Length: 434
Picture 1 (cartoon, rainbow, N blue to C red):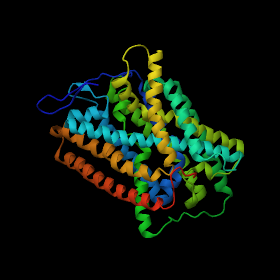
Picture 2 (cartoon, helix red, strand yellow):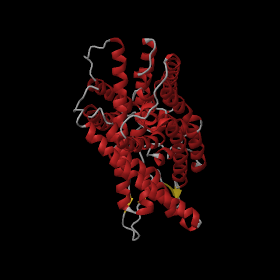
Picture 3 (cartoon, rainbow, N blue to C red):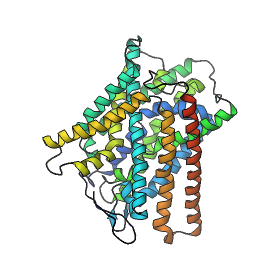
Picture 4 (cartoon, rainbow, N blue to C red):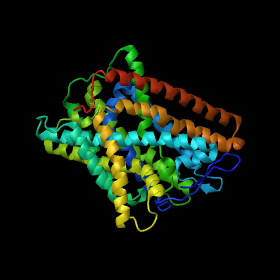
């Protein structure tokens, strides 16, 4: 990666040097990459983390509105992929081109923290799925959550060693979709059966009035998290030209057909269990042990694949900056490099996941401080900076409204997340077996 900071207007001239493949994937493959993120095992928690604190009206309207706003913000970002006569294959490259080197560094820091926490959350999810599988057969407390998290991190590392770059996922995206459909279908069907046989449900939003304010803000942050990757330029870098038109096709796929499984399992889980819905839906459902085992193992395997997508910007940075730059991706020296570097990165992820398995509160804070700015604040402001001479006064006002509004919402979400961290710190301890 080569950055020239010498020019007088302090713009970062980013080269397209990369150790990974770009411009090779059809739009539908990129669409499946986006859909893999949307329908990851995180969907098994939205009944509890979104619907319970918001209720039927707030949760339903929130999911639909968040999808529309996220589609709009991502489309703005996609249209900025080709400006200044070149493609900007990394989010930080785009920010550096528009604002200069300080925003290049800040954007990279925000994105790194965001993706690190998402990946840590994936390892926690995988660990929870493994422990849930074990408990179905032996609820003796021998296999604790930190052990399951350590095993999950090891499996994620093995997968990372064998998949050199994002475009190489290919057939694995098909497996990911298959695994997603398995655990979503099982959760949906078992929730439907439980909902039919269960007496009247309680849909009352829990908590005191003041507590509801903070949980509502936290749920709004979860709504944003559900649809957004924080790495759209990196994903768009893999798509074939015309890159803007093809990326818009992939986004339409994500926010229409690709989001239907999320809606189905989220609404069905809340309908079946009401305000008592678990934060991991498969812990709430009742059914044959073998069926729940298949669902949990599918969630585990899909999480391994999904983590690789969100770790790819860090892998690309490490491979490009420190890799040998010669030989094929499976040359022995390149494989050993991945084992050392990616293994080290995922070891840190796994250690943090095992230490803080109640990471949901910390992820809310990270989302407030990085997901909101990256997806909504920066996207609208960068579009303003690039297109301001072509926009009407009304359009300029609209984008400024988005910048200011989402900045305030980011601050509110950060305050709510800090409160939740303080409350939960009195209950949990490091390496807790939740």
